[in-house]
Amino acid sequence: MEEARPVFVLAWVTVRGEACTLMGKGGRVLFVEHPERGWEIPGGHLEPGETPGEAMLRELKEETGLEGKVLDWNQTYYPKGWVAHVVVDSTDEHEWRVADTKVAKVRWWEDVPPLVEWTHDEFMDLSRWCSEGTQQSES
Image (cartoon, rainbow, N blue to C red):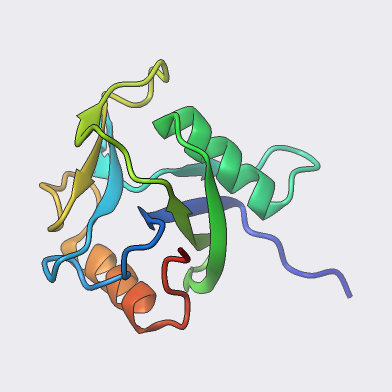
């Protein structure tokens, strides 16, 4: 039996070496600002022949300009999508822009940012998943 594959992947991005904590409790998470949907976590659809990990790292690079490492997957939160806990090296910038026309800005947030299409509960749930999981941001 073939393993179920997600339609899309999303990244809960934290800094390598920093503890993954609940939002508002000391950690920071990387968000991208979509021109219409507002602040959201990086991600997108898998391309033909792409593994979820390959898609995740491609989307991360396209939407943030950063390279990262997938530490763990939440395969159950969204019916058709997986969320990866991804770590990246710390950046000097708090906010920056990339060449992707679907991303107005990239920014580290310590609290849930102002939302348009997503819900506060979604991001708090994912924050809780990351903070309670065994996947600490590797050093």
